[in-house]
Length: 358
Image (cartoon, rainbow, N blue to C red; front, side, top):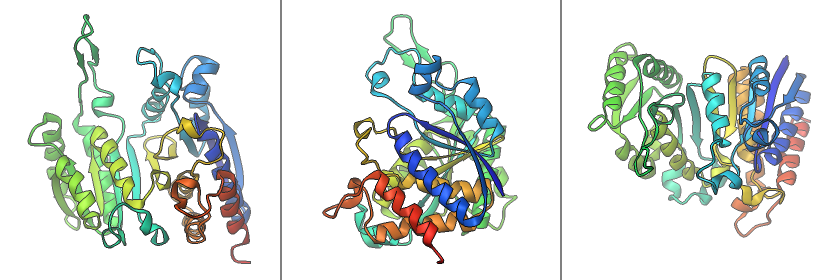
């Protein structure tokens, strides 16, 4: 099978972890006989430096022409420390999501059995945790208008906006995922306070009747935030709006023991994007210490969701689990054991894949 992939390393540790993920992708393609065609594009601060904008047209055309996108991270202290900057690296990510119409972010939250001890939660709470967060990605307060400040600069405002079509397509997607899993859907909102949340609940209650085989529950976001920590095993699929999803998925990442362990997929009308949920981690740039596992697991999601190649994705997960069992890990999760370099972890996983079955 021919796989055409756009590679967007981005900023910070993006290029370092992308190198390791790409090495794993190449090993998988050799193993299964796939023809890999990939091309690199610019996004974020590096794109601003070269072109003046964070998501250049050239990068967009590359993404549209590809079957899938592997994306690293955006962000730079140069912009983080300058609140008056007119253009920011993060705008590149938001623009990519909007132009590719990536309306759904899918984040699996699954505990690795060999890594449970690293979670801040008790082992009995974490063992067998396996749920999926589905976050609406192109609407809500991040994109709502009006947005800005008053003329005197003393008042700032953002507007949360959703329409029925935006809500319906993400709710339907969530029902489809729940139907293929344990058939339970949790719709998270703040319907007791927010008009947009009341619209979310109204749409969800209408669609609920079309999916009688799926158990549907409704939960306020503050309660969901508590339940994810207290009883994470009670969830199967959660669906929510953009900002709530941003916060809850980062909270859920703690369950696995490290932000560097979670991958995500952003899907929609055009090319799907696969990325780790962590940021650009500028403090680690060039030190070869960043955890590449989330980026590598994003490649597993790519094989599964973009190309319908479950065996390839399964082998990557097996290799990652083996690296955790053998404690071939970076300093963020090494504890008192040896801390391996980013490049060493990536090489070990690629070699595991190459030697598997021999």
